[in-house]
Length: 281
Image (cartoon, rainbow, N blue to C red; front, side):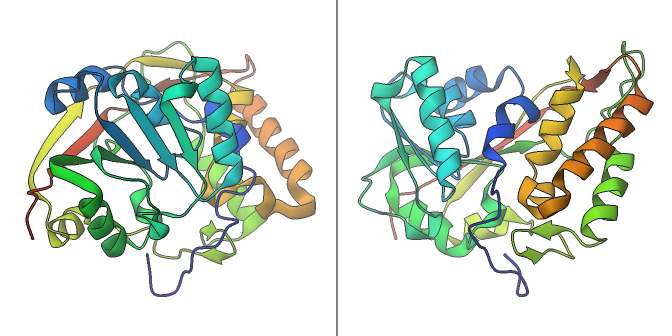
């Protein structure tokens, strides 16, 4: 991560219950794209590293014989289990409450490993090397994230945009100007340049794909509030005894920005980079 930040177990404390309602989905063509690129056929095993409440693993569950999701937050693991039951895939899904740094954890080998917007929270060099060693020869490591370089204007949509700048100002009023993360802070944000880390771990032949978004999404105040509480920088526990006051102020801000109680948002595109394990070295 960074020299002045240390992971702790409160990083996403209290966020799990807000994920499903508050986080925007991956682009709808993700499964079809990965099926084509990776040749998925319902066999093999998937390791989803930093699985959260199972969002990505469950999206891909029918593409593998077995999916294994790991996450250090036990509430996230519990939510993943509930979601797996609701989706009818309990028999092909395993959820393990461990940090990525504790791999391989006797979990066996995998045809595909995924990081869905989670890699930046880990000891990246260690985890990349370990996960490569858990992949079968010619297996794939897949890095998945929202595309950060596109415009997501809602011009022409039905409702006003989510007032993210004003929400950020409100969060800073309660938590201070420096981004919070667990018990620490991240003044410089999370690290990037994943490509150098994956290449350094011996993975090869990166292939870049963008699954287009752009669809109009409609959001309620409950959805927007849940989105705020799902973020590591504004998880419920960070507000302490002022949590209810913050939520009250947040909802008032939202009422002011859209008296109808509805907001429009543009579906983000999903960026996928596939790295291969050469199976040697």
